Length: 160
Image 1 (cartoon, helix red, strand yellow):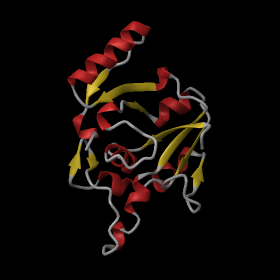
Image 2: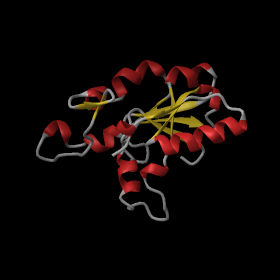
Image 3: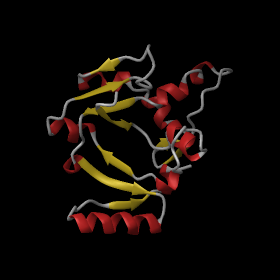
Image 4: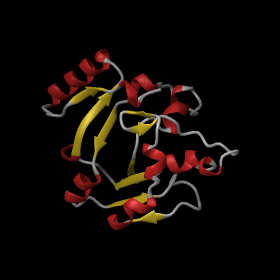
């Protein structure tokens, strides 16, 4: 797993929630410190970057790996990712609910991952997302200093 750059298919992941709540051992940051890198499956595949995607949290022994994009529509639980109520086009809820059959494994399925081997080049990114204007200015200054032309958008709906 540590040889891959992980991407979720939707914002507001359970991992971000855990980080923000201080429940990730050794992680001093909160959600305002997180900068989201956005790409598309097509961008990664178009650059010839090796990848694998999973139908749920990739660390689970019963998750299924795929390397053929033909399986993307059926492997990923798009219905759970995009159902109402939505924020920025994605369902705002991710918690599992044992009392509702449809949501028994919602959290792990919402953590379906697209993993890129070794690195995800900046040229495959579509934009960066940050929590507020102060972080946007900070990140944009760093990109400008490095000569990187990449859009930085304020995306509060990507955060809790």
